[in-house]
Image (cartoon, rainbow, N blue to C red; front, side, top):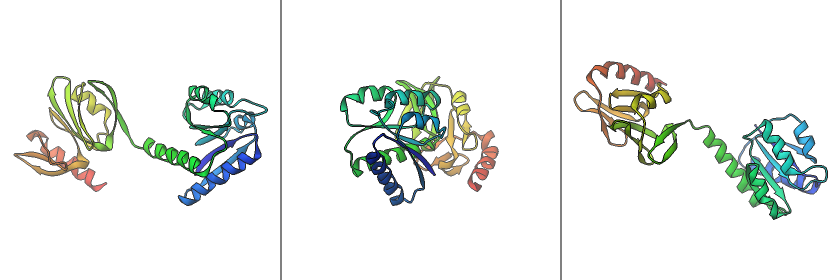
Length: 235
């Protein structure tokens, strides 16, 4: 269930926003609990951990930017969507890590877009990733997209993924230590494979991956690799 907060000192906008959110969640067969607040202090005092917050900036009793700063002291990750009648607030809003910025009067289409972006972000956050040092900086690589790593030279390793290939400036052991060893295996001193993408194994030829590439399998590792692969396939 999603916990969503709506904070605005105008009842018209609180109810309208809550109704649109409810309509979105019902359309997508999602369960959501929507809490309404007419003051930012009341929102903070609730002590509830929210998945998403819609926050008015100009309120009679409190300022939304200041409320956001206080929220960030205890929760640095919750997405905050600022809702306001004043477009000149957007620069200040983004300094407090705004997820989005909506001007009043808003419509269902705008709120649906924000909610769709939020759901997409939430799904992406459940995907495991690994940080890799590349020629151009740090790459946040989704683990489920990796086919294999192959050594080209010392601290120069090519990663082959479902989307693209690039060079990693690390050694093979350091890379392997970052990965889930239930899914990955060092098949050779020059190669790490994702066992989820193994298609065929031939003693003399090595391993055929599902993307059509052949990678090496050291003879002394064949027995252990078969055992690990069998366990992986049974999951």
